[in-house]
Each structure stands twice: as structure tokens, then as C-alpha cells.
Length: 319
Image 1 (tube, rainbow, N blue to C red):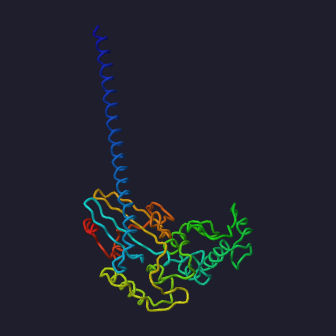
Image 2 (cartoon, rainbow, N blue to C red):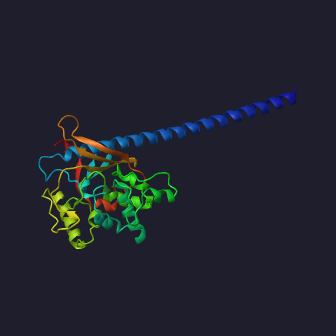
Image 3 (cartoon, helix red, strand yellow):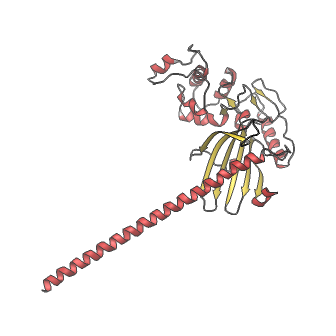
């Protein structure tokens, strides 16, 4: 009898142990799921705040007073709310190099600073031209159908304009490192052969190496100061054969917006918008929309903070 009671006691202890393990496992699972749900909630909230920055940027570029309107020249604006900070950077597509329109000298100048050897630079420029032109004639050091077949690629040049900057990764010789270096300086939405240096970012201005570097630095600083003080933007006091120095023309622009929440969650969005021609419907047409990845530069770095021209507390935007 005692032996049976002992066995029963052992069984009870085993069952209790099993129940304790199951309860602990369930509690741990619920804790993990709760944490994951919290992260998803925080990220969704950060994304929603970042999206609001896009609408705000569109409104602030439409100001009647051009000295107070937000400028699409690489300047950064910051909004401070009770729960987050939002930074917004505007970049005119007219201040970038259009890979569909840029002539050979402009593309050569663009590629001259790429982190690759000289031979590959020349081949990439020629391959870009062969991709976008309408014929099957191979440029010197370029690439058409046969060259892609010899490289073992299952496609050939479209012989049409690039539909996006991402399409560049299909060009023979292109890789992700080169494309990442090029992307901040190129566009397919300018539709201009020349670059409007008046609104070009410092990265693009550096491409035109015949421009005096000290003069360019002074111009960029003067442009930032003019925005901070609601003064007309300065004119770059130099002429360049490859870039036009014109007024801040309206056109497509990139809006980069990043939200940094109090709980340290963040979200960033990169969009390209263009002013609508029609007065019916939304004032801007979205040409491209993407979430920024971990490889994209944050707008909250020390380097980006140097481009900060205005800070607003949330109530100020209501005035």
C-alpha cells in the first residue's frame, strides 16, 4: 500500500512539474508576443508620423512668399512634437543628373569620382548610353546584346530610356556598391540635359570639379543662411558648360522624412513627387514611394544636422 502511495506521490509531483513547465513556457511566449506587438505598434506609429511629414513638406513648398517657403536644395527642416521629432529633407530633381538626358561629358564627369578603376568607369558610361539609345550599335567600350550574352546574362539592353534609377543595376558592369554611390546624385525625373546648380546638393556640386571648391562651400553656406533668415537664395557666381545656373525652377522633388519617437523607434520614407498640372485633385503626383532601409543615411546624424535650416514646435505650424 505504501509502495502504491509512493508511486502516486511521484506521479503527482511529475504532473505538477509538467504543469509548472507548461505555465512558464506559456508565460514566456505571451511575454515575447507582447514585446513583438509593442515593437510593431511603435514602428507603425513612427511610420504614421513620418508620413505626415510628406504632406507637411508639400504644403510648405507652396508658400506665396518664396523666402519663407521650404526650399528643395537639400535643406533640412525639423518639427518637434510632444511625442516625436520629424526631420524632412527636400531635394529638387532638377539639381540632379538625369541619366536619360545627360550627354556623354556629363556622365563621364559623374563617373569620374566613382570608387572603381578608370577602365570600368569608361565601360559603364558607354554601357549606360547603349542601354538608353534606340539602336543596337555598340559604342566604344559599350555593351549591346552580344556583350550581355557573352557575360551570361539572360537579358539585353532595353534600348529605351531608364524607367527608374534602380534599372541601372541591370547595366553590364554595374554593382550594388557603385549604384549606392550614384543614387543620391542621379534621377530620371529631371527631363533636363543640364543640371540646375542653383538647387544642386553639395554631393552633386562636387561632381563638377572645375568649380572652385572654396567657392562652392561658400555658396552652400550662404544658401543655408539665406533659408535660415528668410532671405532670397544666392546665385552661384560661376558659369559651367555642363551645368546651368538658373533660378529655383519648380519641378519634381525628392522628400525624405524621418520620424524619431520618444521611445527611440523610428521610421523613414523616401518619395518623389511632382506638382500636378491640373487644378483638379491632389496638388502633387507621387512618382515613387519607398521605405528607407538600414543602409540609408539617417537625417539625425551630425553631418545632416549641418543642413538644418528651420526648427518648428508643433503649435507654430498652426500659425
